[in-house]
Image (cartoon, rainbow over all chains, first blue to last red; front, side):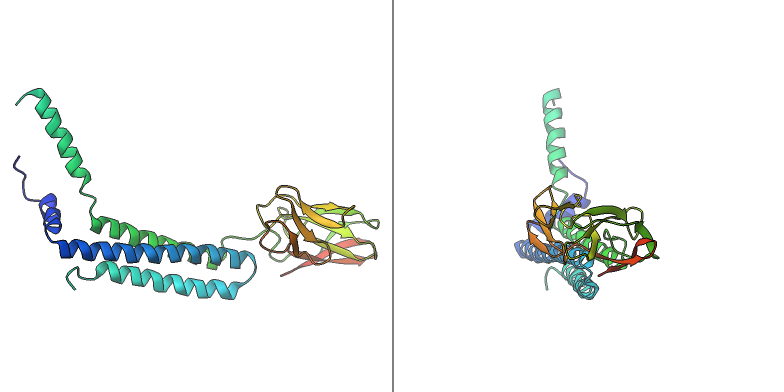
Length: 81
Length: 160
């Protein structure tokens, strides 16, 4: 069945390049790991807040900002880099 | 082409379309989740989650008098902040938020054992300090300062 060139064609091109797929897999794994750490940080921040340890909350917020920026940069990195 | 083969082709098309959720889409989704977790932590830091028994309030009369070994219930600092006060054997007065720090069940004074107990999961708190003695509560009970005045007992503040 003939398909018009469009989104599907572009995405199937990715599948033709194992190096691109491997890069994407690796980045997904790293970002997923960052998210696990962020989940821990969120629960720790809530616990610290309810326990009155506001200093710890601000440190954890800083960690969350760094983690998000890291995830963003990793996701934006060129797959061929 | 028969009707069956048309249906089969449509099904195959749908399956192919499902593949359109690519690795890049997953990556974008994960970054969005990451941003959501950041927003959640920012919300915690901004103070939108208020703990039971936290905050400040003006002094409030909470009881007239209380006998040794007896307890009384009141609300402080807000009307939605249940608290419990106890007159100890040595005559001193103590008071805490009566919301368990585990899952927010009501904390009760057990005169026989001399402890504050959360019956939901057998959490025990020291009546003199509010510290956790046993069970799953992760934090001590917020302590409320009481003052005995000529016309009764007043709650005057929350100790953090």
